[in-house]
Amino acid sequence: MLELNDYPEVRVEMAAGLFPVLYIDNFYADPMGVRDYALSLAFDQFVALYPGRHAPLDDGALKSDTERFASLEARAYVAEMLKSVSTLDIDIDDIRTDFSLITTPARDLLKFQKHPHFDQTPVLSLVYLNPKDMGGTSFWRNRVIDRAAVVTQEDHEAYERFMRNAPAGEVRDEYTMVHTDSWEKIHEIDGKFNRFVAYPASVFHWVECKFVPEPLDLRKSRLTQRFSIHQVNKQAAR
Ligand SMILES: [Fe+2]
Image (cartoon, rainbow, N blue to C red; front, side, top):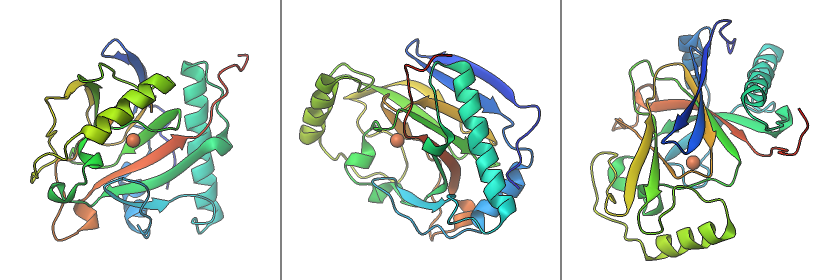
């Protein structure tokens, strides 16, 4: 059910002239099947400050050998694709994957969730699994600290300083950026159905979400499959 499409559309774009984004359109052979499978799982994990919940796809969570093999195959494919377009040496064991749903209504977002963030993992990737576009991922430059990414310790300190003093901002009913005085949007990836994207986690990013059903209805929530790459060996010989 997690079979990959034999003929995906692969391309790399330089976003905002700053960082590469790998796109693989038509990623899964049967994206509706993947979606139905995802929605059959228990979304019982809440991790860090993600405004929703997760269903892990690690070996412990998968019920059959077929599922385990499919998950392994998808992770191996992601590792190979990333290696083929970059100098990053990625081990399949360093890739974690889960399904994620946005379930937090915009008005309940915490201060941190209303600002773009970066992640400590080197590369983030995900597959958008909504037949109707529910929103993609946007990328931002911070005007106050004049940075679009956190790479050095200095960047990190500047971001921490900014966030300490940053206001929570007004409460809104939709996922729109409150803080456009301090953040400038530099790029946006459309959340096209069955699209895989990978980008450097160091670039400030924010989840675009067009709709959060209330009361909670998992079938109407924004669904993605995430692949986080936890470690890369940049010195690897190719
Ligand atoms: Fe993130």
